[in-house]
Length: 456
Image 1 (cartoon, one colour):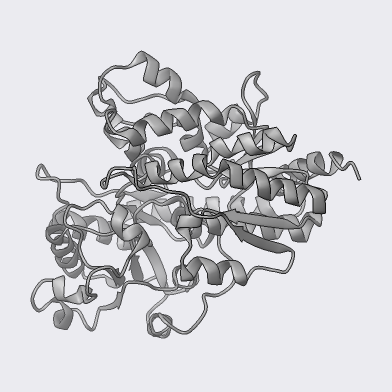
Image 2 (cartoon, rainbow, N blue to C red):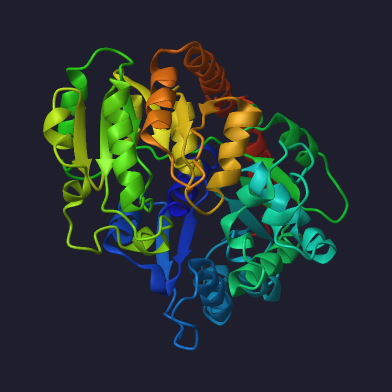
């Protein structure tokens, strides 16, 4: 869903601004009620098809999600070919866009002579890393966390090796080899659309917007965040609660659809929020065993669900006048858009980052997995739109440190500086998507290329 939501926003813009129709092709094994409902609610010009499931029983039981998605994509190439051939016979098919784990499906488009593009739901730092990964792989033998110094990517803030993309942290794991494989294939794209904007990554944007031999054209077309309201009333009690709070007084705490903390860290976070004395709205989820969360990524309610039972004794009653606890899910965009929300303690997923920026909400960076740690480095050291608490020697972020950073964001001078910076980015992102704005014109450039391919 984290990839599908920005792709759907791209599809809506291509329909509304450029008159295209679009068809989503989703992986057979990824279907869920949420995904089906989401796709069914899209405008009539956007249809969807689901690929047949492929056998995965030869994969080891502990295969990482990156491996599962990669294997599913490559084994789905014949089915993608058949769908594209049918679309080619019934429509004027001008382009095929693959997700970042779907570079192998370029083969289906190539066989049919269809221009093939890629969509990156993350940022230019992620894309720059992927462009450089094959060279990095060939010239480095140690684990990246053991590099002598931070990795310096063109146009990007230096990133310590331990903070690089999580699937790259174990070179012996199959998912590492898949990431290197995808990175090589990225250069076969005829263009790469990225859900970011120049003001938040000026250095990388300046470099990647220049045409370079052997590298696809890169098109920053964001920030694309979800529009429209979630179905049903679940979670809306928190918006009524926010209505009763002073302006910019509440810290929103959420780790995204897949983020969970180990029990010890959950306890420290609770006590740190309490010690801070700040109002908070916290989306609480049951703890993981180890702190990293591929399992909950797809099954957030997998364990008998009472997340409040894992919080420190007496915490719920002691904080009932300063905070609101919500189990599992809240309407995040509506919360971030609310006038009472003054900060966001978040996992640095790129969708959540853009949602916070678009709504002008300063951030506390608490990354968990995927590319979130390198996003955190970018947001804190490069963009200066977030504060980041320091981990202790035991790997936990302690309650005192949590209280300090929360108070600083909500009341301190650093918090004001971060808030002003986010406001600047909010204005730049909004301007870029307006007619004649940079992101608007960038998407129009791509649309005009596709319209020029019209052969009917």
